[in-house]
Image (cartoon, rainbow, N blue to C red; front, side, top):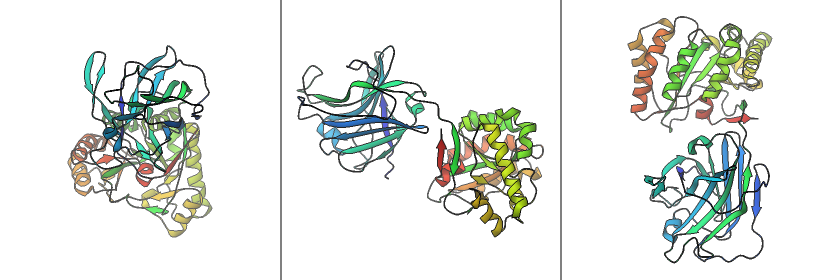
Length: 404
């Protein structure tokens, strides 16, 4: 798989074609019959739009090979049009563009018209893969193009921008399916993750300019204040929760559901924070009870990350945790915020020690965490200014998420 920087979103005034019900997502339409096409346009053999968890996946297959970098040279566009189903109204196009940065870079920088104003098309994060010269698949979040998880109509469209072409000239464009297809999106529910790789992790990949903020010993009466900061700053984090505290401070599961809705991750920190390094049945029960409490609070999410109380582990505990579906998570940045060293000390420790793939251990529970809360905005701002992005541990480790 090759991850390419962006595909792009641009708004258009309208879309030709009647709208009819053609089925739920995952509709694939293959071109049949003869049609008159201009040689400049790319011939679309088939197209599909599916939902895979949180992602929309657009796949298009053409009759002839192409490269993203050749489209601008050929004066051809290849786009996904999306529209509201009722009333039928186009919302825009997601297009593969020409490249200035390499054969497989997908960019688009043409000026477009919207509501009478001239605006620049904008790139969105997407994963683009190719299995051969005739196929392209782009995966992206609906929110990145201003969509929610609701029904829409879609159509793949290729057009020639040659001077001899216009919408009125037959053969200057090709589109599939005809008429546009209906895609019924559903709000995905995160129900789990799959641990893989090493069973004991201290840091993430060193070649990615990202860090992971992690918080232990919650939920707590101050946990909502942590979520307020993270939401305001649009930063995801990973929370290792004590199962016994969920009923007391989780607000009937509202805290845990809020975390998942924000894009945060929840890990297992045992039932009552007792030392479980000895492994055996006692440790199994502590881990299992906490996981059950998390699942109940969230409506079905089963964690795959485990952090041992005090970081105390043993080979036997690591083996036990993995047998239960967990990766045991340590850390490589520890500001010792639990000791209340002061806001400045917490900030300096994190900022000075942050490196690519850093796993930063802090606490949202187990005591007065006002210092940690106060330090958090400056930590985020400084690391962000240094080019770091923030990821959950499942993102950083590349774990597969499971959705219903």
